[in-house]
Amino acid sequence: MALWGGRFSNKPTDAVFALSQSISFDWRLAPYDLRSSLAHLAVLENASLISKVDALKIKKALKDLMSEVSSGKFLPNSQDEDVHSALERGLIEKLGVLGGSLRAGRSRNDQVTTDLRLFAIEHMLMLAQMLTELVEVILNKASEYVNDAAPGFTHIQHAQPISFGHEIAKHAHAFTRDIDRINDWFHRTSVNSLGAGALSGSSLKLDPGFAAKNLGFERSFENSIDAVSDRDYVAEALFVTSLIGVHLSRIGEEWTLLGSTEFSWANIADEFSTGSSIMPQKKNPDMAELARGKTGRLIGNLMSVLAMLKGLPFAYNRDLQEDKEPLFDSLDTLALVIPAISGMIATTNFDRAKMKLSAPTGFSLATEIADYLVQKNIPFAQAHEAAGACVALCEKLSCELHELTDQHFAGIHSSLDPAIRNVLSVEGAIASRTTAGGTAPSQVLVQISDAMKKTLVQRKEIASKSKAFSEMMGA
Ligand code: ARG
Image (tube, rainbow, N blue to C red; front, side, top):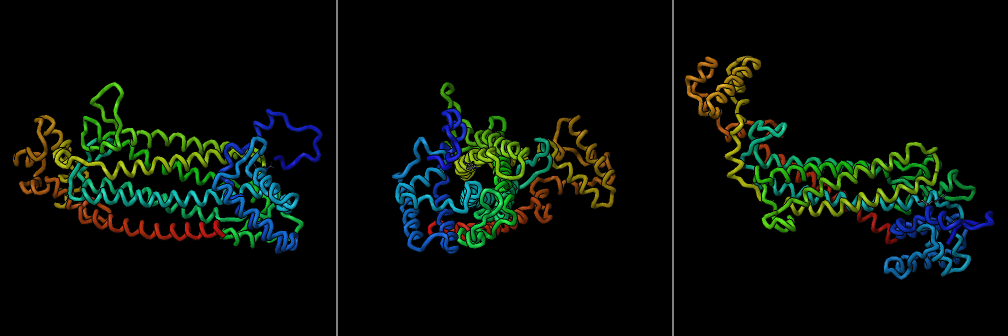
């Protein structure tokens, strides 16, 4: 049903309708649209613009529509332009002309952004909840490998030996920050727009502060033009979802690499792997690859909304209708990727023996030689030079650092006495890195337990926000 037409003598052509309709993708805003209509109804009733008797009738019709929408009994039809028109048709079918009363003091411009904020809040909270579960999976996996040595890399070259638990745990911190980002975003997004009307507010005695409270928003808009044109919350949500994608993608890249035949460190469980239709031996890390691949569309969604916004005069423009699909798509994409990646991480086994064997190779203990000399008061530049000379000699002799003789060491630097061998062990090197946040197992355990505690706090905060949100939706 069209919500306008009085001033037109001809109906829009099919092509016009086809381009303008948003019902094919905005129907999922229906529950939020109905809920915000309840709030608007209360505002109109408080302002004595709708009688108590009529308000009761409209309220019942809205509640009935809510259950009919959720059961699928009420559906949009091919003439409904968008979710707002479809639901007004539903009200009019139930109440006759009275069903058109809610349009007083409200425009689709303030309505649509109210609906979208509610949708975004509910789904971003669900996303944050999923991330806390992912963080727990990562930290649990990390704690299995705290005492297992592996080479640590920079530039994908052996750098220094590390605890493999430390290596896995690093991913948890990225997602913990993402959860914090969602929390920050929540406070900026929790703003009511109802009462802004088309752009300038209303001559009717509406109370946006009341609507804000009724809908569980932290506050109401301060500028009605900003209220209908602001989509920062969409752009920010898309940035956060993109960054989450980037973090998942980096996990995907690592798992793919570590599972390759050359590495053979990671053994991804069968149920999180896929096969090949032609090569019977294949077990492919498709979940890891899809996490990497899907991130392209997450970033694309952010770009499309930023590009859509950049040239818009600062009020409602129809371009803004393009805000929804990217947001829906990014949230749907992460809801698919995160459980698959959580499962993949939880069920991956790493080859401890292989990682341990590999840990000292590639001269990853060279820094220990330099640090040993520094402890004997040799300036670091000189110590670095001497350790480099040890590596060069090993390369010449085709041996590892611990295979150099006492004479070799002494010949390179007089302070490289036989005790140097005490630091040329992987376990010793790892255990000595007791800097807070460093790779010594004692520190990794502290790190994991602190991160676990932080996640629990985040999880409680999210749960209480989600509970308040569902209570509001059910009110
Ligand atoms: N479907 C529209 C959207 O998503 C609703 C708002 C339409 N407003 C208007 N003035 N035409 O943005």
